[in-house]
Image 1 (cartoon, rainbow over the protein chains, first blue to last red):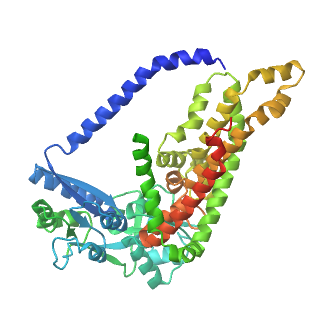
Image 2 (tube, rainbow over the protein chains, first blue to last red):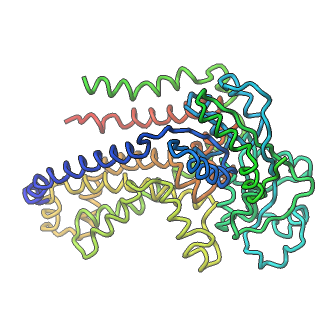
Length: 265
Length: 246
């Protein structure tokens, strides 16, 4: 259809397209260059549940060390461990499960016993802003067992097995003798939080600290809630990596962790 | 030279996948109930999305190729934008539209999120552009005089469509449908965002790979090999399309 008519503008457009492409590539290269300009980059791989804590640590550490650029990689601990085992260039690995450190300890620069700097516990969250009085004072066991909230047909969001929060959830379900119906399995704890906060799931298992970051969810206490321990491994010989690890164990960092709801031993 | 180097780089990951695959345990890993369920969900979702793409996409392509009307470019943009959009964004948009608290979800009290229908919707949205582009292109390059002659011989619009245009577009419809099906099989981002990762409901093969990667990497490799086999099967089935016979 009207082939001749269409060909003309196409040819006229060609230099413009090339120009846009060139501009995009130049801008992209320039921006990438700026990000790491002159500053030592410290790659910190941290569990998704540490998102707020380590974002605060990044700001504080960079304020104290202006020549260091802390680059956070935040994801499920298992995903991060896999990336490191596959050769990712991490300087610090901070998972939500001490056991995950063992597999990367061959490459770890320090061979000491990992020191736990924070602990966290599992909780059941429901969508709502706290105005729903019918769940007030209800325990998670009642909510799940009696079907008061999580009845048949309800959708529960949880971490996939293998992720620390998923293993903690399995732990809790096995001990409580509970069997969930429809379950959506997420790769990290923040994905679970998003599903419940957005109202797409009827309940979800997250850590106490994650529940505290979003006022669109209500947290119900679990009886004998499973806990996780946070420890980290320094994977490079850079003194900056050691300095960052020392900062995470500092009283200042402990104070920030407590404010976010973590337990600090 | 550039072509040889480029093809080598692209070939290495696939070769490495074959070398990495746990061949000895392949059958055990692929015959687990989880995998069989994921294959079933994948087939149901991708075939439903293909049917929906053909039913909606063929008339849409016909209208786009043969008619001029106000807002035509808007229609074309709407049906092809998922091709360019990151699938996760398509998923977020679906949540806004059809989620439990989305535009329609809150109006009618039900959402399509976290359902098999939702997974089909997500797959259709990302797969249909392949069919529409393929069919529209074929209709545009078809000789319009055939239809004009049929009209001069007294054929009505419906008869012309059924007896001239549709047969002319048939190879493109078949090729477009196979491409759309392949895209639906591989869909991940929009599905996990909108339909969740629920076993037996929305956990398709790619979503199962993502779960397996967290707990059982060998199973992830076995599943990846399965998907690679399917992809190669599609390419072999379509090879005449890419190597024109004329």
